[in-house]
Length: 387
Length: 145
Image (cartoon, rainbow over all chains, first blue to last red; front, top):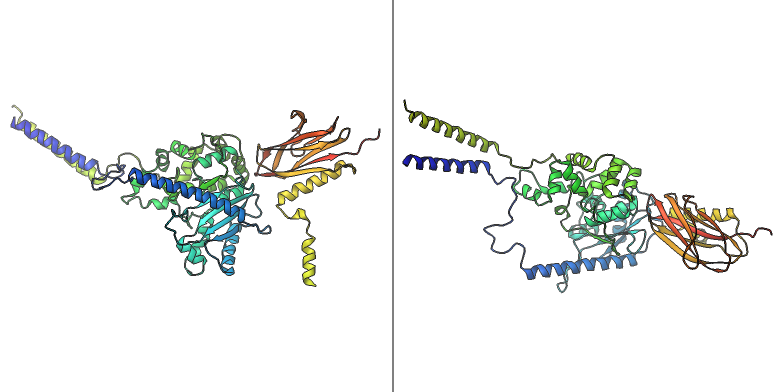
């Protein structure tokens, strides 16, 4: 009996040690619950309702502002690059000229001359808050796309924030090299409208369903200059929050990060099957933390890269196609969407490994325990052997 | 003196030059086509122009005078590959449809009675949306009887 108890104890201890070795909290999805959180992280129902109302008010406010801006804008017929309008402060003429010069330069850099759809950029300079009403969309980029109030005007609303407000007003001088990328990123979907015109109904519906997450940036650099993309915001794969970030995305997005073509295909074609009614006015509101809600990483440059790879003619075939998005895109790419996208993804990130990945130390400990157990069993068995 | 010259130069810019390249393209194109078909000097030429995305439709109404031969022509910009033109009766039914001439459909019609007819244009193919189009309803010189 004593011997049996000893064996049970040894077995349980071995199991415990094995569990310690093989189930490290790395790469596992966080439950989202913490024993040390005293209140609900979601907020109370009343607070959630208040937030939803405030969000609704902000969206309506943004739409009204965009429509008002569209009415006010007087286009300079002789200017090919975007008309720039400043709100929130009166700028000295040289400040306006400086911003226009940067915009003209980057417009030429994008290869644009006269475009069918013209862009108007409304730069909202930071102004003081009014505590009586919810904060307006001072930190949220929005677009009034063509056919909302005018067939050939795309209006981009770009909040400057305190940093760029001071820069534009000439009160801050550092950051000049990042100003052009900031302006370029601010063009967002309007850059696609300028370059390729209004998309066909199916493509537009697909992009609308996913908040244009694959068409936020047309440039060939990263959205924040150089090669910086939304992938860089995930942090270092060795950091403890990296895996929480990875698993916060949809399974298809994660599978695509792992280099799986089927996952990539599902991530790209999310929203392509449902045909939506295009609303009027058609306002594209970019999520505050758009990089957290993408279906594809770094999705913001996906369509830009597709366009550069397949060339203008084939991209226009896709853009205005009346065929389903998956068919039109595969025809333009001349490859299955999933395969092309998986290759594209590998250009930015080494495929992540999914599933259990025992660490080297854990494997060594487990093997040592196993060997130890076998030796103990063999030794005991040899002593109990009846000769 | 220099200011006056500048003002004269600016005022001399034809209206058609103001606007996008594609708009100018279709205006020039429709103008040339009207001249080519030979309009009657007695009746005015009715013109309409605008922009359409692929598969969109535009229509308008115009009065056609009885026993007058008309050429109804539609042109579109370089990005447009197919344009459909339809003439509608006062009751709204199709009288004639032209969709084979790709970007230059033309209809010939002589109205039996003076009435308000409909004209419908469908942008069937446009590579770079929106595409500009222009329509002209040209009364022709009556053939010698």
